[in-house]
Every structure is written in C-alpha cells, then in structure tokens.
Image (cartoon, rainbow, N blue to C red; front, side, top):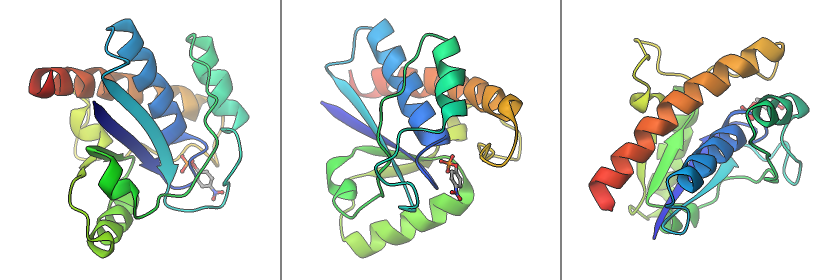
Length: 159
Ligand code: 4NP
C-alpha cells in the first residue's frame, strides 16, 4: 500500500481539493485500495473544520465531494507517508524543516506542480483563500493536471 499526503497552509482549500481529486482518480483507475491519500496543513488555524465552501462548491461541480476535516501536519506523518506533496515553496520549507526535526526520512517530499505539464518557473499552486471563486477554478485545473501525472508516476514506479 502507498500513502500520499497533500499539504498546504490551512488544509481547507488547496490540499483537501488535491486529496479529493487524487482519490477520485484512484477510483477511476481502480487503484483506490492500493494508493491512499490524506491531507494536512502546516498551520492548525482551521483544525477540525470542513473545507472552505468555495473549495467544496468547485469540486462538486466536477462530481467530487470533499469530506476531509482540517488537521495540522505532525511528526508521525513523516513515518506514515511515502510521498508528501507541498502546494507551494513556503510550505515546502516548513515541511522539510519539520521532517528534519522528526528524525524520519521515509517520506519523499515534492512540489505538487513538479508534475504539472503546464507549470513554468512558478511552481506554486496559488493560495485562493483571499480571492474569488475563479481562483478556485484555476487551482482545480492545476491540481487535476498535476494529479493525473502524479498518479501515472506512482503506477509506473510502484505498481
Ligand atoms: P489553504 O488556504 O492553505 O489552501 O488551505 C488558506 C486557508 C486559510 C488561511 C490561509 C490559506 N488562513 O490564513 O486562515
């Protein structure tokens, strides 16, 4: 079994969307019992909350329902997960610093958009929290492109 974790700042916008999209793709490809996803935030600002209503509205339009409750990334995650994907470079720095302190080196930590065929120099999934609904649509498209490639990568490498 492979375990993958998506991480952003608040765990109510980008990373629960990434988790929902990725899990949807694993079901479509029949690998949901082999590759399992979760998400977390580098902050605990919204711990226990459902995703932002705009994130839920955006994914539901594409047939994907989000039920994840926000939680903060913790040291055990570096032991449990095979891959940890960061939504942006600011959170990548925090994740890598936490991994060092955790003393666990199982998890491979990567940028989500390193799998986006349309990514240019800017590898961040932009934080849509302070913007309008259009920002969520843009994030959805980026996450779908990235996760299709990420899942292909996992299937080729591990299955
Ligand atoms: P996320 O978006 O990191 O994609 O979940 C944010 C959600 C909440 C906050 C910042 C970003 N906040 O500051 O509360």
